[in-house]
Length: 364
Image 1: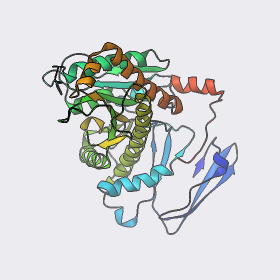
Image 2: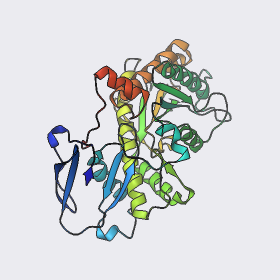
Image 3: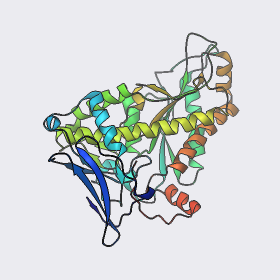
């Protein structure tokens, strides 16, 4: 694999061979080029495709060497995710290559753009959500916190918030995901206020998509790829054979879930400063609003509206602002450590770090 205008980083360290690959080595090419050599155990028929920027990753070239038994049948469920994990782990970041264009991906693929964060206020309209003992409706406090969070994000240079719901009306769960995608969101944050029978339980929690939820969503997308379902970065599943489409989706999905966990950990750490955290670690669940396979997504249970003390705090504007600032702090920390390539924020971080913006090749 010859890569123009590309150099190795990390001392040229390459992953060990696995599956059909016996070993991986590299060498230099004229005009600052790099050659990667995959020594194979047997003849292979490779599939290759490009993947546009996603989360913390830049443009990628993926070379897939499917097992002989899988060349005519798509992997399913956790088998597909496991295969994608191996591919994603060793995917290389290279000099940007031109991604496949898509109308849906214009907002995310344009250069020098803002980082877009979709802020979703849970429930709304005919769905009030949970109701506290004092009559507080979840849909009202989540909208208040979402608006404050959006204001915090909009005050950040290089970042822009999109409110999925900016009024008291109903939006379906998948409708929320669709709106975030149409706005070119780099991240999706759903704001909620939990409720349980035990009214003594209080504190906040942060959720990301579970493995089972990811598997079921992958199967759904693959089944509907005839409807031109496009992934972020402008790559469509339509027109690919089943094996390639499955690997393409799973590579993207694996990256998205990994980024979701990272931002969730940052948000959870920031929420600890605002008050009690109910769950000390990031939780995994199959919530529908977390199921976008190409947008890092988290769900924040800001407090337990079923707990009287938490309910009182949720109604307090100063506490709402404190929660919003905490979520924003975690999101900001994540994006400053992982600025999406080609964004204003990436340029800002590069200037602050004194980076020259040189393209590198590194194993992820």
